[in-house]
Amino acid sequence: MKREAGMTLVEVVVAGMILIVGALGVFGIVEAGTRNVFRAEQSQTVANLLQQEVEKLRSVPYGELALTSLPSHSSEAEDPDSRIASTSFFYTGRNSTGLKPLVYNGGTSEGEMIKGGTVNPGPTNVQIGNLKGKVYRYVVWDTCPSSLCQDGRHLKRVVVAVRLDTTASGGSPRYQEIQGQFVDPEVEPAVLPEQEPGGSDDESWTLWLTDTPCNEAKRLAPPSEKGDHLTHNTRGNCANGVHTGSTPGAPDLLWPEAPTGETDYKYDYATDVEPKTETGADEGLQILPGGKCGAAATTELATGVAKEPDPHPGAYQEVHRWLSPPVPSHSGEQDLLLTGEGTLSLWTRTLGGAVYSGEICAWLFARSETEGKVTDTLVVNLGPPTSLDFSYFAQSWPSSGWTEISMPLSFGYAEEGGALPLPPGSRLGLAVSVGSGTSSALQLRYDMPSFDSRIQLATTGAPPPEA
Image (cartoon, rainbow, N blue to C red; front, side, top):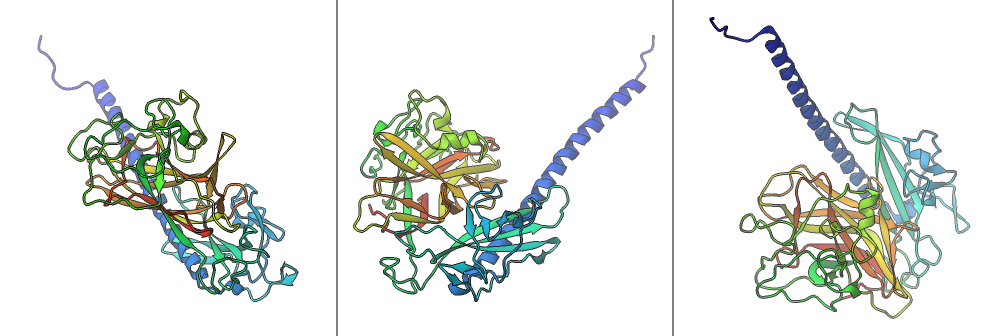
């Protein structure tokens, strides 16, 4: 019998269905990618606008930094004015927290009527390209420790929000915000000690990430050779000393002195995470992807002292911690005070030169110890949006070489809002992890002259500790 060539009708139909299903999948990926790009572009545009608004307000004299009128409460949840409660404003978020009195013409402070304010509360219409929305502005009296502000009128916080008009599917959140603190420059030295009238009360405190555990009194000199080691388990307390594997050990040091030396050594601080794939491709610390940034489970891994053995055996490879030396005792009654502004700078790259997206998550906390009990207090990222973590995302993480990334920090005290006091004996803590959307580990390089990963924070009150 002669064999028939070609395809039957059924085969043609099946092939067509496979082609259609495959095409739908491709179209879905393309659509999702386009939506993500659109969302990112809109978010960045709004972020730029917010920053411009705050910079404009920086030029307003402190005495004029008040609203021209009292804004009205809105019952619409997506309206920033929904956070207004009579003459106060919930500044820490949209969930009715952080209530502070508004500063507005006609209001009162310390028995005196407020007048001369020039800040328009809005909403003010704004358009940038095809992006349309409204700008909202709020000024509140901020928390000021009694050791710094005796009459409570020398520290204000400005909140600026941008609410977008209805956008196409995939647009950025309906409103974003930014916050900033403003200090009265005319404060007398008796109120802000060691402050000259008209000067700045801020002093920068820079802490460099090191490979030295915090049970040491100072940063250790880099070894001349054989500096590679297993990942430090940093989920314990300084008294635990150095440990690897599932035994909680001392966090590494944040040291107030830049690394020195004539050359940068090439050591691997996590030989158990990723084997060397090529020269220079596996240096410093490698952190495996963990949970989603901001998720409760991830936040819980960032702070606290783990029991032995670690109830989360692999957590030490997903979250790495650093602690500053204890804040020393000092003359006077002022505590070291973080004003809520700073920058985290990290030298980073992908593994083996591979190209993939990446996300770094970071947490700041104050650690205190009383009668052997350790307490970690997280600061609040004032956003936008408000959260307990700080994050940095890149669609294409640096891969061809080591690159420095900078994460701006704007935060408030987790309990009250406002600045974060660090009393004598306490330590500043930093925790870093890699977001779950990252396909492989990310590398961090630090404790070297050319790769000086560090955190810079504005302070006031007592002077920052020195090495």
